[in-house]
Every structure is written in C-alpha cells, then in structure tokens.
Length: 240
Image (cartoon, rainbow, N blue to C red; front, side):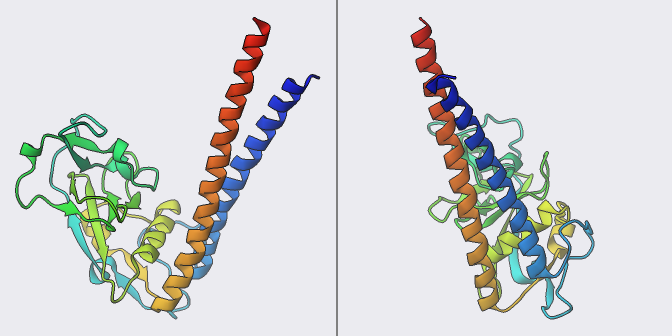
C-alpha cells in the first residue's frame, strides 16, 4: 500500500473518530443536564419539566422571561442575506441550535412596519413552527436586532432571576429530549427549574466548555475533509 493510500485511509479513520467524539460529547451534555435537573434524558414528558426532589423552585417561562412572538409573514421570501434587504427570523434559522443568518428570510425594508416584533442581541430565538418546532438559539451578542417572522418567538430572561445562557441550555435539553413545546400558550407555561445564580453559572460554564469541545471536533473534521480532497486531487494529477 503506497503512502497516498495509507494517508487517505488514516484520514478517513481520524474523521470517523472526530465524529464519534462529537456525538459522545453531545450525548454527555444531555446526560449532564439531566443530572443537574434531576431527570432522565430518555423519558419524554412534555407536560412537566423536571425538578431535583423539589430542591429548586420551578417557574413558568412567562414568569422569568419576556416572550415576544413574531407576526411577520415571511415564509415565501427568499432565504439568505442580500444587499439592501432586511433579515427575518424564521424557524430554519435556529434549526441547528445555532443562529444562522444564511437560513433567515429576507424582505425589503419597506415591508417592516413600525412596532414589528423583534429579537434583540442576546435574546433566545425559538422556532414555533416548521420542521424543528421548539429549536432555539441565542441571537449573537454583536448582532443587530432582527424582525421576527410569525413562526418564531424571542425569549429574554429576567437577568435578576435567570441567566440567559442557563435558560438556553434548559431549552436545548427540553428540545433534545422531546419536552420542548412550540405553541404560544405551551411555551409561556413551560416549567423551568431555577437554581441559585451561582449554580446557574456553574452549569452554564461547564456546558459551554463541552460545546467548545464539539466545535473543535467539527473544525477538525472539516480540516480532515479538506486534506482528503487535496490528496484526491494530487492522486488524480499523478494518474494523468
């Protein structure tokens, strides 16, 4: 077996290992959050959010956050940024649990009326329709406000009671385990366990570190894919 063939084989093995590590971290995040919240990651119960033996008080989402529902119809508009256009949050923009400008709808600015509901930087954008109902993601802290399509809501935690990134991790856990509702009434009444701020920050910090590990594995996998493409191209040139 020549060096090029061996290299291609090892690249494939390394890419598979990176994907396996990514999936194991993702699973570990779910299990860790389940332990923090005192529930099973494999039990689906949309009606009742978990609590740890009553140790932490549980509040409806509407009591610990401001929820803004979108009303702009954007389902038929072209997707992705375009010169002179305005981005509209639609369910696809959070389907990956990361906010994506490229998956937003766009409209002409003239279509945005004064008072149109918007998500502000740092808000959690939640899909209330589409193929991934209940998916959510933070609107990046350096992002301009964005109008909300009718299939989305923005959730802004009451900072005096709830850390925004803690709340995001809770919503992601509910979504991953099938507990996350999508209708307006069910979203507002979603029951959220609320530990003290120090505990919220501890949970958030650990899960953020795990997320960083997932991103690192994705980047490694992408780098290996580029290397594999280079090797294939070189082999094609050598074969003439």
